[in-house]
Image (tube, rainbow, N blue to C red; front, side, top):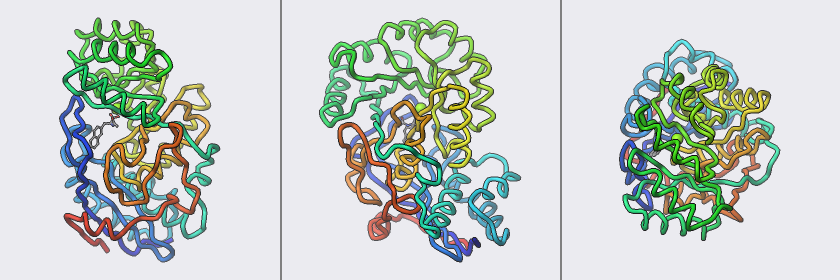
Length: 367
Ligand code: NPQ
Ligand code: MG
């Protein structure tokens, strides 16, 4: 296929409730969407970067700039190429994984719509429905947290992830375990907010039967995670640290983690994400699909990956109404704690361009 143009759309989506993590409180999602125009079909992609560089070094304005000046022109000049060529074609530009992943997804969606194949079939997903989880932010009061978890359990979620930070860990976890019992799957995510001096608080979490503890220490501290793992019975899962298939293999080999969170944006694309899945499956390492408060576009694509056999833990892929009152695709609705993997061509869902038009705060067409 040949890429003839890319339209960038920045949209503002209000969150149904503020979402607080160790790196800040979000009240709206500032999302960059991409529409790839090819000589065949058109395709959609979503960039998971935040407006501010708080989760990782990437941010929306930076993604727009690198797409406009470097990434899109490189693909447009490449002539005929396939989605599998995107990462190699862009490899000369360092970093900017979330921007690259968004462009790769838009091109892959176009390619698959053109040949009438779903992303799930392309990856080899084996499940039509996948059990999903919900992430619950830091609430500041244990009562408010228990109320929030109760609402999610009532909605049908069977797995919750509690955001933690130093000073907000043992008490909230004990309250949730005490209130909802041992059948609820519970895991925690620190977003790198702990240091070696906080080890005893993390050891104390071993009493609560958690599925895993996600990213307790700094992104670049694989050695620290390996050392911490020798002190904990709770499995360590890495998120921010895993930026490629090579880094995932390194982390597992050195004992820094025993479970891997897969986020296509963080690793530079869906094809790299699938590679991590395959490597982990072959090595017997459990994986699950993370979440970045995606709209229906990114959510649909994440569900295709979540249907793969190695994704044995529930993903952070909630129903649309967990985050948004209106979505840019028909809403994903929870049924028995699970979502349906889209099976139509490409990402497998209609993109509601009227809704996108209403929400657009900025647009840019790159030839
Ligand atoms: C994580 N996601 O696993 C991320 C972090 C995160 C569902 O916990 C706006 C955009 C707000 C991206 C908040 C979940 C966000 C965001 C948190 C990503 O670490
Ligand atoms: Mg995380």
